[in-house]
Image 1: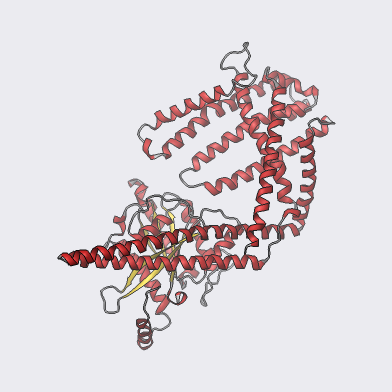
Image 2 (image 1 turned 135 degrees about the horizontal axis):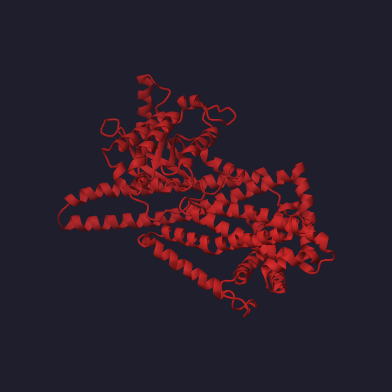
Length: 370
Length: 233
């Protein structure tokens, strides 16, 4: 679809064939986005839940209908509905997809605008030394040793109880019964106490592990920033941070052409950033069960992203090229989308600034306690 | 006290193959009811009677270190995981029989763990590539366990079993195929249980009774360990 926009600007191919290709592309994408993918997502989610194995298809259809219902309801509060068009016309569908996609884009670009300088600029990198990491690793290993010794105690106690349990069955008489009751009670009380201690220690070991990973990652980032590539990205980071700040506080562009190029670059880098973040996120939560669902969710997100990026590109394209886009997409209220994008962008950027500030503040305090 | 008598066995494998369920089954003889992702490393202890039934019977506590594979593959995570690979006495490699990629990743896992091993007869690895001869003289005993055996249909079973047979040849290790939610596979008397106890015996022998092939030295070794009590406070 981006090729189509570029062709539009360059004036390649004949006008009617361009028009045809636009329409075809849009129909196919919308079809996939709205009908096929949610159905598959519902199907896989339902098949993951063991209870509903029997009527998988039925439940998947139910999930899909719920999705369509919410999708339709989404259109109500926004000024999209227009009495001239039918229910299943392309404008209705695009408008709804556009709303979701634009929200998503604004959220992500707001976050990306703030995160990008934070990640790349060395000003924010905390100073981590090797001895910090070694000390933390030693603490981790000590915690693991404590867990091991406590578990050995539990195993030994349980074994003794089991062996004594066999003897107990042979004990008869009044005194035998009382003795057996008291001894097992203290045994199991001890066990539950030690088990609680073990649980607390295991939680501590997980925290220490994650902190160590964090420190190692920071140390690697510091090393990376000293290399040539790192310096290059650092410079880019400054450049982009200035641009993002400018974009946050100003809404009107002073030159359409330059802004078009810059928006193109931002879209490419934000897609790249989006993919990287999503990959990291999905690697963290993936397992063999849910990988299908994750791939489909990813496809859905990417599809919506693309459709709405077409909508937004129109915002920055010079006036003469907007005609065909307007023609294809029908009478959508474009201004509404632009304003909506800016509002969400602002909200997302401010909240991610707040979030990163808090995270940054919290981290040095944790390390000062070492 | 702890470092002298510990027997440490690593349990390695991709995320989601069933290492935590396996460790729970081996140590508690029960099926794990609510498996969740392992962050970092979780340890459990198995009570093993070495040479059960003979006069040299001794109880050992084998620590099974289940290193979580689900946090990702960034180099920061790898270098943090390396902390757990010190002084390892045995490795259990776990793969998912329904997932071929997990079996292939075992080469990577074993290299990662063995490269970090700091024992004096450590494995010398050339540029990280897999080399079969190294595993033949490997001082650390390996065991290969394939999980989710029940999820393979009858028709595909032969193909899967031949594949795992090749794997176990490559690693010079025994292989066990089971289903971690069914304790029947490891019931006493099954060939799986025999292989398992043979593996643990090998680990214990390598740890305590190696480099003394002569009976005299072995006798003194055993005498020394007979006096040590294996109870911990």
